[in-house]
Amino acid sequence: MDLQRNFFIFLFFILSFFLWKEYKKETFIQPEVSKEKMHVSNFINYKDEISNSIRIKTDVLSLKVNMRGGDIVQANLNNYKKDLHSRESFQLLYTKPSFLYHAKSGLIGKDGIDNFSVNERPIYQSNKRTFELEKDKTELRVPIWFLSKKNILYKKTFVFKKGKYDVYMDYDILNLSKKRIEMQLLNELQQNANIPKTQQNKYKQNLMLHTFRGTAYSSIQNKFKKYKFEDIVSNKQLKLKTNSGWIAMVQQYFSTAWIPKEKDIIDYIYTFKSKKNLVNIAYISKKIYVNPNTHKKISSILWIGPEIQDQMRLVAPNLDLTVDYGWLWFISQPLFQLLRCLHFLVGNWGVSIVLITLIIKLLMYPLTRAQYKSMIRMKKVQPKIDIIKEKFSNDKKKLSQEIMRLYQKEKINPFGGCFPVLLQMPIFLALYYMLTSSIELRHAPFLLWILDLSSYDPYYILPILMGLSMFLIQKTSLNDISDPIQKKIMYLMPFIFIFFFLWFPSGLVLYYISSNLITIIQQKLIFNN
Image (cartoon, rainbow, N blue to C red):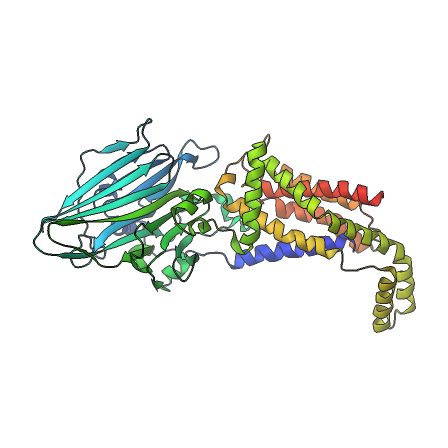
């Protein structure tokens, strides 16, 4: 099997994969609303939500909680930068005139104090405007409360742990009235379907780097299921009866999720579109009853932060699946675990990628050796094939039969060279998913100018080196192509690959360069024996 066929197979898979990703790409419908109208009607309480809020700061989170409803309306992740060279921390939850992303919670039903449909919310009280986790403390508790006209005290307490992104939210309901009260807990995530252009990262709009942004949930029926913003905007709403699970909004590297702490408390999970292109996913609990002069405690967990798989796995079953490795998750997950082990040993993600490439190439060496040995035998029998082609040039059927008979006699598998290439494709694509989905590789430096392995090379040096390494493989292989058209195509292949790899993550290009260099060494060893 000659090298040109390998290149064509590889190129075919590359093109097919990214054309498929473009076809599957999420589209967000732009609302036909003027900016003035959107500002007034969509975010009429924008200033109130900022001014009437308390600030909370831990070692990893900086939040604002709107006292009207007790919702988290702003969240910054202190340990993650907005961009590679930015001094600003990454903001996950927003309250802006052009964009809104909130984590909401309330009590609805017969005696509930929240009416989301008409935006009637209780005004909570607090004894402080600013809360901060002290350096020598491991926990911060932030209580807010509301006393209703029916003489029912509602206390909402946010509990933060040092170094943790899972926030506990406890509702304490003290019924001081003379009647039994009834309500349901509603936990909701709300966001605009459209990202404002000012918040979009330009290179992520490239075909090569598209990732999923939308809602997700877990239920009894599904461990993990994504649900597109596009479907919610198009009124293809989800309503799922389940008594356990969680809801989430996910994007590249980060997510928010509401998880009930009590077992079997959920009644159903649903999605809906509210006014002005806001998409929502929520769960409602079963009915909660509180007898006179008694109290009831209801607890939920809000994950708000980076998609750190080990931590998420401990918070809720299947929550770590929000790290979306696509349809090759069964390769990406063990590949990532191996990469983590190597990083633990060497302390550099780029070096870890080089080492994992070496391990993969060593494991595949028997197949690679068989491939090149087949190429050597093919080269030796090529004169005989030329004779057969000349002899049976007018009889296609006889020509094929004679060539196959020759292959059998010489013990040559004409398709043997394809298998190593086909085997490498899932690994290549799994590494792509891993690099664009694992938070650990976001802004991870390698050497010199490569400061972010999850992003493309800003100077395009790695793609050029990759093309040169491909050209070296061509020169050191045993290909003897006589057809001038095929020769031109072969010489064009490195340039074609350079173009496609320009916007690939640097880590992926590094993998391919390492693979090519190891291939050159393996060629020398095999051809000289």
